[in-house]
Amino acid sequence: MFGDGVVRGADVESLWRRDMGTRCEAKSCQTGEISTVEAAVQSHSSRDAGMQTDQSEETIQDLDLQKEAPVDYAGLLSFLQGVEDVVIKELNKNWRSHAFDGFEVNWVDQNETVSCLHSLLYPEAQDQKLQVTSISWNATGSVVACSYGRLDDGDWSTEKSYVCTWNLDRRGLNPKRPDLVVDVPSSVMCLAFHPSQPSLIVGGLYSGEVLIWDTSRIEDPLIWRTGMTDDTHTDPVYQVDWLQDSKHSHHFQILSVSTDGKILVWQTQRDGQLMLVEGFALVAQQIPRSMKLKRTRGETAVGVTSLSFSHFDPSVFIIGVEGGYALKCSTAVETAAVPRTVSSIPLKAPAQFAFSPHGGPVYCVSCSPFHRNLFLSGGTDGHVHLHSMLQAQPLISLQLSKKYLFSVRWSPVRPLVFAAATGEGEVQLFDFGKSSQKPAVSIKQASAQTPVYCIEFNIKQTQLLAAGDASGMLKIWQLSSDFIQQGPREMNHLEQLANEVTD
Amino acid sequence: FRPCPIATVARRESRSHAGDSSCASLAMAEVEETLKRIQAHKGVIGTIVVNAEGIPIRTTLDNSTTVQYAGLLHQLTMKARSTVRDIDPQNDLTFLRIRSKKHEIMVAPDKEYLLIVIQNPCE
Image 1: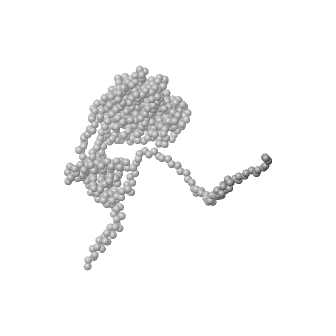
Image 2 (image 1 turned 180 degrees about the horizontal axis):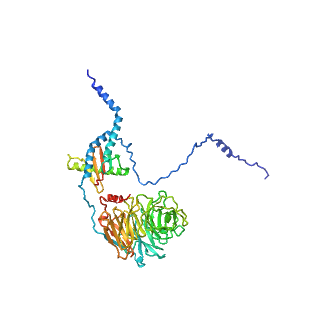
Image 3 (image 1 turned 30 degrees about the vertical axis):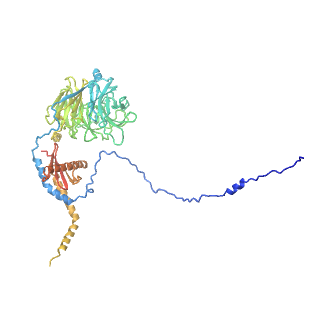
């Protein structure tokens, strides 16, 4: 029935590999030959060069007269020959003509009187009986700043004082409320606004420090200070001024003058410090003796109370000293000062020429903005001397007051006019063209016991004159029209005055 | 027998061509002389010669002042001339004088040039 049997298994051959084999193709590829070339390069010569742009002061248009327009000389000659006679006839007629003598034209409304526009005061300062020690107008002529302190106090005071600014062009000007009040720990003796940046103002303190404020910062206007280092002045700083910006740096340079005999130049640094960069020291034995002056011991310092730079030569300046005379100095000197105190920068002796003395300390000097040789000096003897830098004797000596004279300033528009602040509470305006004996206008600012300490003309709005007195009041005066416009012959008159130098 | 007139003319022309450069320098010297004479008169501060486009071609003042005077006075002279001719078309501007507080400016106009003289008439 059933039996065992072995059946061979069924085999199915794989066709996959054969199929794959029929479909595959063998290919090979290889990149083409890469061509390479070797080359070497080296510069033959090298040179280092540096470039820097220079700040150009003014764009001077270069007139290349010869090359630009080809000039037809023959045509030009015939033109000139034709007009020459006519022009020369007119020139001669003009020279001899009297047609315009005394002919004056008024383009603006004439204002005949001097009037007080504003009386500004700060009640806190008045309560402390502080006096106005210094005034400054800012670069735009719309803000006036004044500093309070004491000028009649001989003691070392630690009472704090203020610097206040008012913007006169603002509507709603409140004369009793300044726009900005800065508290200062010591009396401020002098102020100066920056000549082109309207918000920077520098002040010199009774303690010898110099501080710079930025009036556009409300929270903390103080931005630079000298601090109390070995270089700082040891006496009150009576005058500060801004030096012209040096062309290659963004730092400002300030000059400070003090009765310790030193004139120091400070530079602003990034960390809020003022660093001493240059200095001058006045020592009695280095004063040039052009006249017989009282003998003082050789190494005593000569206290400097005021300084004025010449408007024509920026390295020449005039200083007034406590000894009662004025000195002509230069920043370009090389002689070192006889050292008395240690200082980080070597101090130089700047004095070149001494002028004849007043009867008391000189509190103010002012160089004329219209003539390179003339300057005024006023002192405690109540006299104002008009000096020429070429001779020691004054050209004109005027007695303006029986008390002290605290400030004299040349007018910025009229070459023959200057203003003086007297101890009798008056501001006197003097005009050399009208009378050389008595003042043209005498403005009564305060009572006869209250001296006027400082006056400043406003360079931008030339009819304004600010005056500060000992009662803490700052008055803004509007001058009459004849003090604002230059007359036709004024420069010649000034030249004549300056030429009266005796040989 | 007359010499050919054309030939004579040609010879004259060639002579003037040869002397052209010397004529120009002669004219230049005379121009300088004339300007110096005007400048030497009493009280004259400066002299400027301006061409028809308002570009100064001779001056005794510094560049910036010259450019200022030339531009402004050229415009003023054109305006003055048009004023005179508007009032009377047969008339024309011969001379312009401006008197100011400090000095007097005199302008002599022409078709191609303008002479400006600034004088300080101080007695």
